Length: 196
Image (cartoon, rainbow, N blue to C red; front, side, top):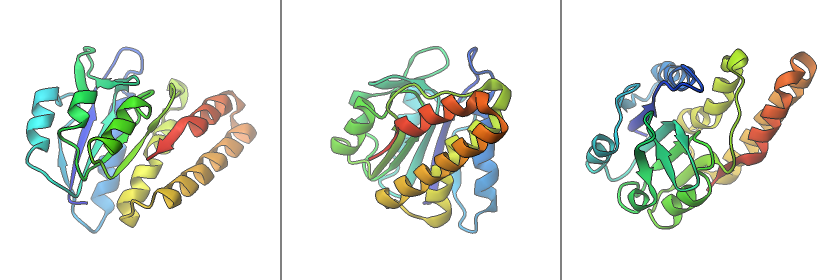
């Protein structure tokens, strides 16, 4: 991958969680031998800016979304549309879309792959959960599969599903031993991540 677009913002419900995911990813990218150009910084991606930027790329790029969403769209910090079903048919051909926004694996993720030509989509089919008291654990889990894609330069869906499932299972086991209060949240996220 040569280019990555990162969408994140600060919100009232989760505070700086999306920012922490963004920074963790940027720090990881700096450790990679292949130089990946990062586009969009925290709090600066809007629908028109994002799609204007994406229109310049035709392949080998990733769109990473740390935001809120639902079955049909991703929204910005003011609840304005950021990525919609209509957008999914225009701007994402040959891309990888990695979304931690709730429920985006449903209609939006499927549309990105089936109608938009996206070569890989990662997302959640239900509400994903985090504990604001244990942000680092959830940042690690939310970024795990993307780091695997980047470090191993793979889009093998079966491999990514198996490794992600294994990682979530490990984190679930650890949480049951060390911090049982977050175990149900991890279980939820494990059960609702999807890769298409």
